[in-house]
Image (cartoon, rainbow, N blue to C red; front, side, top):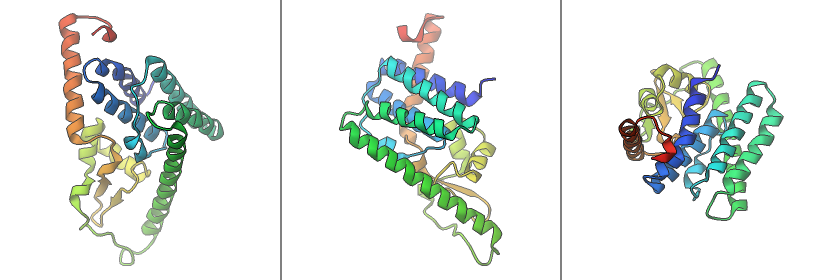
Length: 226
């Protein structure tokens, strides 16, 4: 049975070229968002993706990246981590080859960023375990952090199209680097975990609505004929 999240991810991959017919710059933003979501899905989050000057991919690149993502997920589910990481290297090579700058530098920085995020997540998980075992009086986390830099679970849920409960579970599993739980038990998630801004998301949503409108007006047609 195909996971709903996998189906959504596949649709996002396929939407990139469709959006490019309307707005190429927005298509690049969507491309980065799909890549970021892809890496997050396999537990390899890195905010560095947002700063990569990527070109618009061709259909063969999209199909290749999509296929590599599926292979990585398959191996991770089967606990074949070594095979998964080998394919991840190929994924990174393909992605870095789509940059408008030096692909070798981008590839090196991508790998370094992923390793750094993995290290930080491990440290965060260790801290959380210590906090859970320690007396509350010994360790406290202030609720006074700058609220403008953090999302609430319901805000993340709305932007990702998932439930609040799913977001909280993802927080508990360390899926959002830098997320922390206040003394009152409320999760705070750094805004930089999402690759696109709210303004960019709204524009993307408008483009998707335009595509839906065209589909309804034209009837059952191939989306690449729009």
